[in-house]
Amino acid sequence: MHSEPPCSKLNCFFCTMNEPEHSVRRAKLSQCFKEMPLRDDQEHVLVLSGLWNISMTQPDDPEFPALGIFECMAKLIHRGIIDQNWLLRGQNIYIPYYAAHIIGSYTMDNPQFAEKAVKSGVVLPLMELLRGKMSWVEQRVAVRALGHLASHEKTFEAVVVHEVEVISLAMEIASNCLEVVYKEFVGIKARKRPKYHCDLLTRGVGELELQSRKAEEWASQLQCWSLYLLNCFASKERCLNLICNTEFLNNLCGMWGGLVNLTSPAGIGLLRTLCSSKTGRENVANSRQVMESICNVSRSSDDWQNMAIDCLLLLLKDPETRYGVIDIAASSLVDLVELRSLGESKMVGETISQTLLQDYYKIKFGFLKLKSQEAEKALEELWELRVENIKRDKLMSEQDMKERQVLVGKLKKQGNQKFWTGKIEKACKIYSKALELCPLNFRKERIVLYSNRAQCYLLLKNPAAAINDTTRALCLSGTVSPHSKSLWRRSQAYDMKGLAKESLMDCLMFINSRIKSEHTKRVRIPYYAARMINKQMNATWLFANAKSKLCIKKEKTVDEYESKGEYQLQEMMDAKNMGFPDMPTIVEDAKAEKRWKKR
Image (cartoon, rainbow, N blue to C red; front, side, top):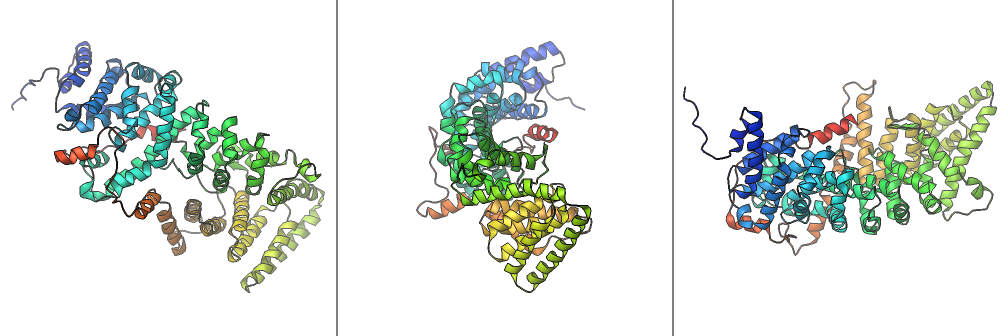
């Protein structure tokens, strides 16, 4: 067998990695990191690809951070921005992306590495990428890295130096990135998509469908990391007046997050952080659109339901915002007062009841008048439920309880008969009477009555009332095994109100509950549920709004866009007619997902 010829390159990174002597290897690696930004070598991309892989799989290994990897990455990003000829030579166009990703991976959970990175001058080059000097692909890894630096106490100040600009850019990216990605990649013909974007998205092994799917994932991550960066500032009450821009706040609830980036606070998480401060509470409370969006999330199957409830409670506990918020939120929160637990939160319903009723005597005895009669009626109903009915039930004898149970059962049957004969309004009234008489501890009976009355409201074209009743039935049934019919009925009600996301979440939970049910072995997804899911997934598609906006602008084609950087990278690439080889596939941000699962 013939041995491989010795490498002729001076300070070859791959040869250095194979150096058996530890001290010699470290010295050579340090020299490699110093010389890499100064040399033109087509193997730089292979080196960075390898470093990227190591930073993703071994982010706590101190060797490379101690030997100057951060300074090297910062200089490579800087060179890519100022030297256009170098950037477009060979495969160098990949280098800024990999360099920023390496910085972000090492600084994600390690404050010591973050301090080294800041001292090595990474902030300024990352800011250039954040400004859009290259493209949205590089913006994504830049905002990710800056978010990690801002999350550590000692390196936060390094990002604060650019505070106003960082916040303005992060807000702009969070608001517009989906439209940008659709306009510059997803919505254009495959042959016009930037080749190096396609290679980075799929590592060179994916077809058109995978490219589009990964672009959707990355666009969502770009939005998520922007919100994460803003959350770092909001949690320290920095530039709140800038973050609390009315238009931006109105859009926040629509920024889902959490789907492909589980470490993001999402839009509702940022609102929760803002509600922890006086300035934030004032601005959130002053926007009816924001308040209505939070109320919708609080009564949904959304993963962030608990954060929405927290937002409302924080606003209600503040005397300055309480009475403006209670007019809007009371009717929604009253539906949740029998919710026992939600995730790790216990006695959720009890907390809501105490918060809503803390000064109800002012309203009850006429000292205080709310603007909303609906809110006053909801609080009166809550008082009846949580105070008067509890007293009534305590005074009942065991015999009285049995008689009530029989009477409620008879009324339910009467209501069902009226319903099936088409007398919906009469059925609704009978169910209401049964609910008034039903003792609070008859949870199963109350679940059915609320759910049946909700079905009546659906047929009477009253989706708001149907949402009230189905939410109450679901709170009574609990989050572990929710009442499946109520989930489906609430999904229909949200659909009638045009709230596609809430409808989709409930429909998915409805199918999940049927699959888990012991009584439905080998269950099939009902046709009506599959049709609802298809409808709502189309409505909530990440790029749905971006696509509709571009369709309206008939005078512009989807592949025309203006670069916000100093030069138009795509035009230069087209002029050079550049093509790059395929790259290996690897899952990104695996450590972040693992960390979330542990938490």
